Amino acid sequence: MIPLFLGASIAHKEGSEDDLISTNLVALSLFQIVGEGRMLSLSNIEVVYSDVILVLKGVTLEVPDGKIVALLGANGAGKTTTLKAISCLLKTELGKITEGSIVFDGQRIDQKNPEEIVKYGIVQVMEGRPSFENLTVEENLIVGASSRKNTTGIKRDLEMVYNYFPVLRGMRQRVSGYLSGGERQMLVMSRGLMARPKLMLLDEPSLGLSPILVEDIFKIIKRLNKKEGTFFLLVEQNAMMALSISDHAYVIENGRIVMDGPAAELIENEDIKEFYLGLSKIGKRKSYRDVKHYKRRKRWVG
Amino acid sequence: MTDFLQFSVIGLLTGGLYSLIGVTIVIVFKASKVVSIAHGQLLAFGALFFWIFMVGLGYPLWLSFLLTLILASLMGFFIERFTMRPLIGQPLFSSFLMTFALFIFLDGAFQLYLAGQTRAYPHFLPQGQWDFGGVIVPKGQVVNFLISFFLFLILALSFKHTRVGLKMRATAEDHRLAQSAGVSVRNIFTYVWIISAILASISGIAMATVTDIHYPLPYFGIKGLIVALFGGMESIGGALLAGLILGLLENISAGYLDPILGGGIKDVAAYVMLLLILLIKPYGLFGLARIERL
Ligand SMILES: Nc1ncnc2c1ncn2[C@@H]1O[C@H](COP(=O)(O)OP(=O)(O)O)[C@@H](O)[C@H]1O
Ligand SMILES: [Mg+2]
Image (tube, rainbow over all chains, first blue to last red; front, side):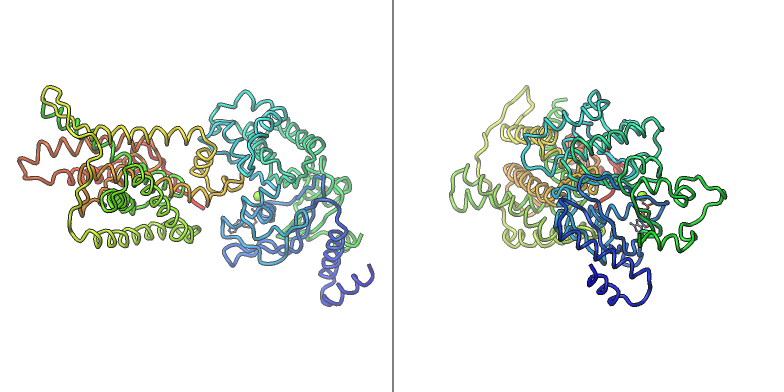
């Protein structure tokens, strides 16, 4: 490890924070070479919209095999953009990855088409739970299996999906445009599952749903993770809920990861409580950037 | 009364073909949101290919038809791949202009080949007519109508019941969402252009059995466009209905007014219809007020 650390600090003489980030990077790539099964890793991703708007400023994160990883952050922090960078849906809205790389299962997957990403086993469930509104529930689900060549497993998977989301079974012939928010959330997640993904990117599944429904959906996520081995990158503003089912979490602010750690630790963290869980003692919203500098440094190191 | 029935029957039979031309434009728009004005040229080339094979080269009917369909699908494929696909992501207006360029180019090629002369079309459809108490029903046109009705049926059923049809409907709703579900939207565009070109060539052959190949043949594409607009651009059923209405309108007005005004009412009727649509119901009979795209 020592030569690697040296290399990192030689390459980046200026800026101690940069140092730490690149050290992290080197450690990351070392991890890949060792090869711990499947994994998604983003290294230093920079995203620009319309050639001028810099939104992600070097995001580095990973989702190890079989884990649930949460990505937390305020509105406009760049969470959705991060997911779109992974699923390559950026391309459809003049967004571009200008720096860094995304590796899944040992392969570079940035610069692909969205439908190819689905073939690799990554499905994004977009925020706002968009469905094909004029198609029925079951037709929506079958479209979800579009990336698959052989059609034999589709019947069985419909059955599997209906077992996870029994509500949908009774609605299979219903036109999806008329579903309620909760039903629709279940539909879009099921549609994602029909592609038999290894990794699902969920964008704010809880937004605007009743607490009971949210709990149901998070339970199902946990079950899918356990039983189907699907791993998740979960974007949430409902940080408490997300942390309660995640293994690891990242906090993004202004297009940069400002903190990360095991979910169990973050849930206890005072700053997280204060800023993201709304449990502030002072009662004043602060940017995470204002929080004492040494604390952040410590976390990067330790 | 006999007059009225006579005009209506011919109007409906012709309208069936208009519906088919209209739907070729509808399916391209539905999937890709590109308004094509070059489909009349695809139609004319379909008719011409068939004539070349059957009359020019003396091939049997089935072979001429098969070869025409192959050439038509190649045309659809190449048009999509080399003129439409590079423009994905650009404003839709540039794709529209590209179909205008295709219109000019293909029309030039067609007129050059024709050199102002008429090519008499082979009589492979049943000749003769039925006479129902003074109302004449030409057998050939009935066959044309049935063929186009049959094609409509196949089209509607395959949109509804096949996997690729389902992908096309998903693409029609939302390009981005379809891609995120693993649909290759680009491939769908290619399929749609191929299917559309095949249908256009069949409608061209059918039309030429009535009109022969004559310089204005490609301009039936404009009628197809009117039908598509009137039907709402996205609706297959809308195109069917709009085509029949246009056929009726044109023939009835021409039947009564032509003898008084000395001809030409047919085309005027179509444009009056277009004007009315644009003024009163800009989204057509079954249209949706939304436009979005890759
Ligand atoms: N297509 C786009 N073009 C330009 N700017 C965008 C686009 N999409 C998002 N942004 C901007 O990028 C920033 C991050 O957006 P987003 O990733 O959606 O945030 P989050 O999901 O964390 O709320 C926001 O400031 C937003 O305005
Ligand atoms: Mg978002």
